[in-house]
Image (cartoon, rainbow, N blue to C red; front, side):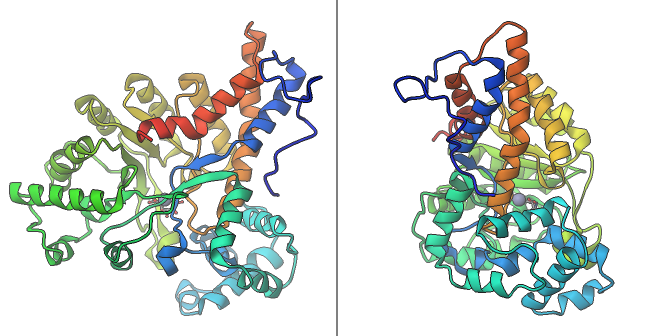
Length: 434
Ligand code: HDL
Ligand code: ZN
């Protein structure tokens, strides 16, 4: 289903233009909401997408779409192919196996499998073929530059925000060689390798000329700040980011905690950048299924409370992975105006849960939050992820306006446009000083 500016529902006045200042009667609110959501270009504030200059790091096309770790997890449930056997297959054979199992032998009714159907439909491709011949021919025929522009236009996106890991060997090379800035792709400095337990960035940092050590000594702290300054200059990120386990505690007596307090937070203040915290992952609960092997755990958000309270000059963009943490995240957002909740992340990005989270956010925060990001890893996923977001949010937003009307406050299209701009653009632009 392709995002198109709705035309029939537009209320055209005698002058042939929409009267956006006109107070909407109740029966016209939902149409106006759908129309504004459809015709507004959003900013996708967290993805794993890349412009052509990043080469193979950027994923696109049917074989990558089908071997998405969300679908691999579902494949292992439906198939008796052992993970080890699956991993030994070439990518095309993996995609064939997933298509056959999830789309031919079973009905694609899960969120992730329906997404593939929506993408095929959006490109006018058959959605019930027994094999991938037609889809592969279509994608093979696309030139990436044009294809990216078309896909972002179909998804109703003006901009996508990347995830850039300065310690990933392939990605580091792209930055070191100097990469052309692409206005539709905004960089983010991702710090998992530095701040996550279990990672061992030190040899690589030392090889890049930084005098660091595992104890996070005062010299090391200074060197990590120099590293952050070098990469801020090279990358010009719109924020710094880290994903954290459900066990995340702050403060605690650890090198990571010292690095966060004495290097990362001061650097964010120095460069006036928000810090994105994505909290609640339980990494590799089933290593056999690799990227699909991560799970979720309820976090102790008192650590977030201490960060927001003790660092009022820092701005925090926060997404939490556990459904059980959502309500308290809203409450914390009411306590701390340097906390911006965003998205229905990963296992939460399903209509039943998106609805619950979005309704409680509107009830407690009005429009002072960022409803969604796609987390897309493969380019064409943004088509279905944003179609789903618009489809799920329209009735929720409309209902909020209906309640306001019933309580005595009428709504104009202009106000709906202002609210949607804020939710999907200006809250982020303001937070990142754009
Ligand atoms: O750490 C992250 O950015 C997460 O979004 C992971 O990439 C996760 O694997 C994912 O793809 N979630 O949608
Ligand atoms: Zn992500």
